[in-house]
Length: 252
Image (cartoon, rainbow, N blue to C red):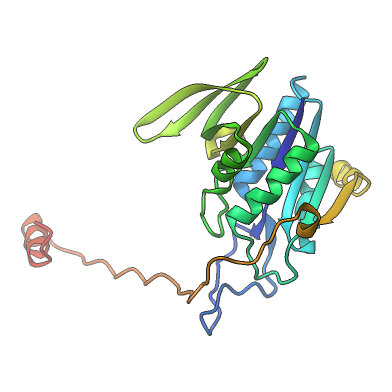
């Protein structure tokens, strides 16, 4: 069985995001970029499936700018066998919308014929949480979202999902789309020897036009602003003072 793992290049989660002075978007100048953390978990799970003998090949795919090669090399260093880069933008500030990404991935899936697609549940830059579900609809495949546990048995996958108030376990038929959550696993660090080996692993480069997909944006970003600063707290000397303050604020 082949496992396909889409990965996205995003601002590193340790970096404080800055908005451009003119409000046209996020400032990416000299900003550290890395693999979307949820996608990293998906790559790790795919590698574990291969190590357990349930998968034969792990293919990582990224859609965006040429610089996403670095992200794919990270996936290869972790243990993916090969990678596909679909160049769909020239400007690093251009974010390909989920529907266009899903259409390209659908074309890649039809070409690669994997048994399962493991996606991060969402990207930390736009928080769309839509690509996996759209891909499932386009392919007509089953889907399991927010996976915190995954077990493949023959032609079905048993998935434990994180839902409001607890956990839900479902069984889906293969081939399937699974979007992964934080508690599925702890991604490994790529060792130096594996980082060196990753440079020699195959990385195919294609374009959105190769798959006949139009990536022209359907949405227009009007403005980008930072969230309002949180108001400073107030110290009180007694419970009575606290209740009085809450009443004044209309909280009680």
